[in-house]
Length: 205
Image (tube, rainbow, N blue to C red; front, side, top):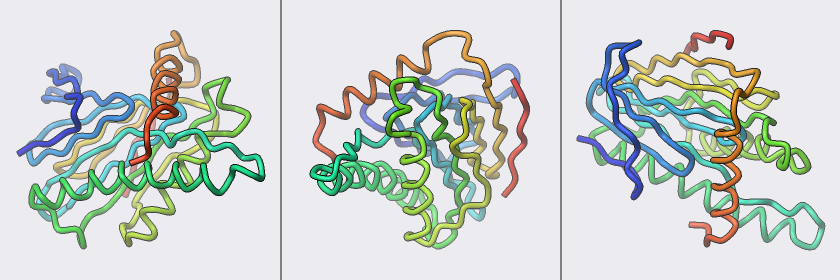
């Protein structure tokens, strides 16, 4: 059983890990009961890797909160809108995990991203805001975070194995092209037009 958002993520066979894999882009999520690897590349966005260690059911999302205008007159309004979007992004992942057979009381989390890597995002440090949201949300829901790598000034590539909860994370200190920045900038622009609705193996670039 599998579920994902309206834009179906890219499926492929990963020769390096010898496993069927799914690549997530900004705004996507994926839940599976099968032995698959979920992969994403994060700049300012965050990804929550959630899994039930008893059933082997797990999933990942890749999301960014809408812009938060931090002027005094607009802060409360825009912060509330952003939080609603983030709650939706997390709840839809959790709900699909439970629908697939996961026990919410057993779900564990590993979270990544929120880097300060997009020049136009530096003023408000969107990555930090995303990171704070995901950790606060999981704390409120009582879902323990077993591992995390958040904020700082580098991008990340995350390889998540939902069947056992293992994560490999590659730190990307130098962006060889503008793909990450372009995707996240486009995603942020789309959001601005939308109504809000354990251990890690790290290897250097």
